[in-house]
Length: 148
Length: 342
Image 1: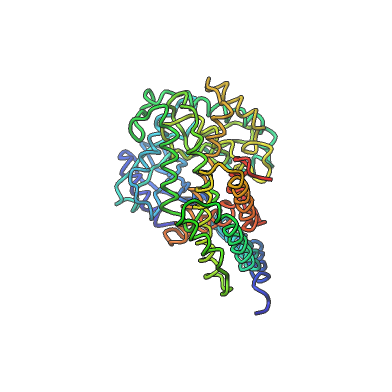
Image 2: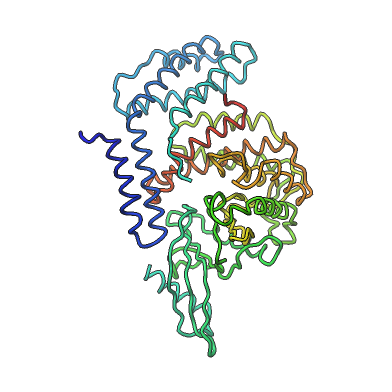
């Protein structure tokens, strides 16, 4: 597929801003075209990293769950953590990666809520690692283009 | 647009029985406020022997809205504050009957010669006056915070409310929105909600009118640095006045340059202007709680926008934009507010 997808999306955004938006009849349509151009730029950025950021995050969460499982007092939650830690991403298409990511992030919420109820030093260390992972998750999703 | 002009002209003729030859032109949709359709238009008619011309704003419910009382809710706020120390456009007509424009709407006078954009506060003629605009903005917010809801006819919001209940009611409301609309798990948002429940704020100092979306972008200013109107009252409610102060200070309204709250004033200056005007105090611990809350509320709005677009209930691409770009920045700000950034 040539030109590559991200390059095509960047050029479409430029075309939208430089050629189409100025020719639109009213302010609302022009600004909407600008928004669409912004989304095209964001899509270009996301296209390149879409699989990589999900694989990286899924892997980081599985490692975290494996380390946290021995601390967890709820047997049901511990079982889920151990099972999740043993998983992997075999299908690298976006839909299955995203589905796995959603399951892991839901489990992260449950783990953090549980850890917050514990008082030990180890629990605090896991809580710190969860916050680190939350920061990393925000960074992985960040889009360089800012629209406002 | 021509059909909407003709339909609105028929409605205006109905509202102005003494008028003849009622015409509408220059009707154009205004960008922004993605959940609402806002139009500016020019109304012309003959009354007696003279030709009259009025510039109006039409705010119409979106197709997907199921809450029929929203228009009247916002309209009441404009009625309450019109002619007061809090500048608002003059509200004219509230119409709930869908036969005129298919959906409920209201009409108000256009405040002309103004800008509402964030960009205009950083560059252009008004930028030279931004300190003055900022002091005036937070002074006006202080006036809203000290207003008597009962005297303004806004005493009944969502039922009775005690000073201790303000935070819990707002948090539960927005948590429910997130529960309903999230497209996937939101660990940062959920962590912030749990923090809010573990660390409740002190009781409100008073039950105040809370604008609900008081920020740069929602007021009109002119090139001389005068604030001409406070807009977008659709989320007003009774509650803790610190909610509005915290919302106005949220870094998302000045991102990526967070040194000036709302691109106008250093944060301390904004808080001082509000305290002086309201006669209330913004204690650091209470304000912190409300600042974390405003992140959760913002995230709820961005999450809902993404849901609305994803479900094709609205085709406005701005809703996708906030889901893709603004939600991520809001999560980063949430981590900053919680002291969890490195």
